[in-house]
Length: 550
Image (cartoon, rainbow, N blue to C red; front, side, top):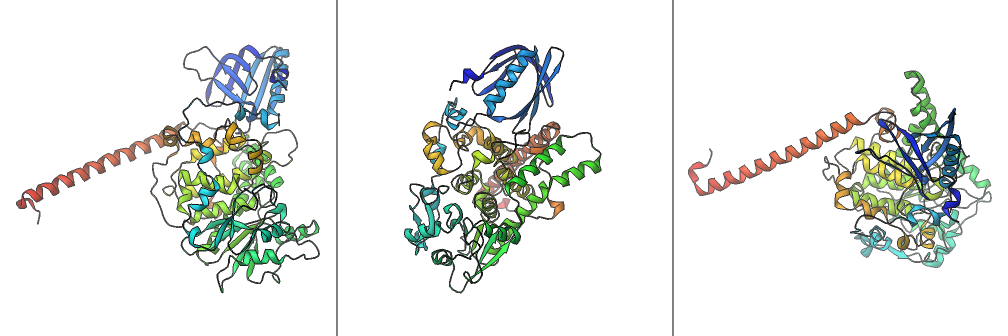
């Protein structure tokens, strides 16, 4: 298929662009296969380059012969284009609708993008599963091994080719366990806690069904992670009622009779369709400027977004508490094991592991616990909050995770090497990007699409020194301790940096941030001067003993 077939009018002059907090711009609108571009001949005027894949929906309005297109983006931005001529306006609108809803992955922009920067480090090779696991010192002397049972993705289509499993469990056993777990997602290692040797695993739900089906191999696998005389915790991200209902569809949960060494705890993290509805309501509330305070707070509460943030953080804290304070190993699963499970395991690691709070460590966490672990980014991020089509499998699962990370970052502003802007960047690129990192739904799909060979990794761009500067937290001081976030309602705030950034100017916040950076730099200069004077004084004292102060 040629993109030209979908572009009815490639260029229109005299188009006026309206954007939040920026002056209107008049110029020429051009459509390409992947971008909507508005260019002005005025000096110092920023051009608009908008990826079609970032467009969630468009609305058309007409006043006489003047047409307007309201473009609503997946990054929650809303812009308006005033286009002279009804026919041109209709043609542009239908072209943009067609180009923004293309779902043929190989026609997406990352396959056509050629970087204008020098690739110093190939991001596709920065976080290879083998390197990630072997970097854990415990691996060489522990009771764990790397299994290639899923080398061809046949045992579990959503797992990577290499997984860490107990050394005493062979590959034949893993194949049997895979038939007993949803989507073949048998229990695998997610995190090893160096402090006490406890582990966190993740999996899909067991397929016990209404007949209480049992799998001895599954019991052997998860018991192999327990120390002698120790008990473990199974954290099921569903309520007991939802887990019971899953039995009728062939799913279920681990019975205490078959898993006597494990205590099962049920939590209440909502399913994807509920989360998508919640995002739509939240964005609608944030965009409505006409309400009184009471009405605004009522709409915010009705969205239940903050409730979801609280539930996810609470469950992650529980998992971290079981590992660090109870000295127990943990198995986390929901239904599929690709959504709420990953939210919990990744947030627990941020709480427990200071390495995950560094820029590179956080990238590794996203690779390990989201991309390699089989979160279906292509499906979940196909639509955002403005889409007019009925949600299918879309859900802001990753955005909720980033929101939870922001909540912890806000409570511990000196313990993270990265800033809020890094989290916002990941949100934007998960929904629309020139990079191939978030394409596909699993490692198997990315391998089939040959993404490392045909696209550029987001990490190749982020990890350039000049870009890292933008995301480095000037307040960062390495903190080796476990950090325990508060989940009290008054401790959790609306993430304004995402949900209100297009509704009000960030100028004062930007100025305050710049002033803070200036103060920190000035403080470093003064500290260096103090250290230099101390060294000079010490030198003088050694040369002339009479200078010694009493």
